Image (cartoon, rainbow, N blue to C red; front, top):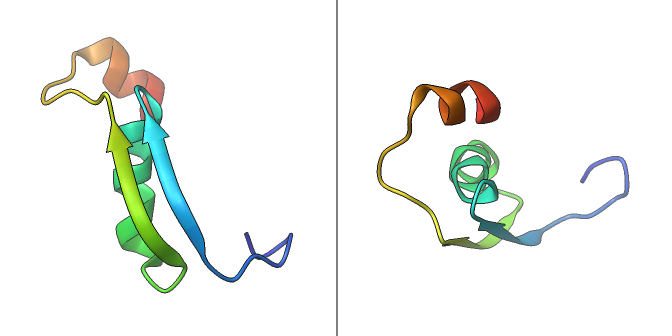
Amino acid sequence: MDVVEIEKAYIVGTSLGAPKALEVAPRHTEKVMSLSANSRWTKTDLFIDLSIY
């Protein structure tokens, strides 16, 4: 966001993007206008853990 000079944004993560949005948003609260995590799950398996994080 800094590179393209975006000051604030609405963060939306769907499916595999939902956990990433939930990870990134708290780290950059000054840049997040709102957060929407859609179609996420409550528990992951090893494959998803290694793929996302």
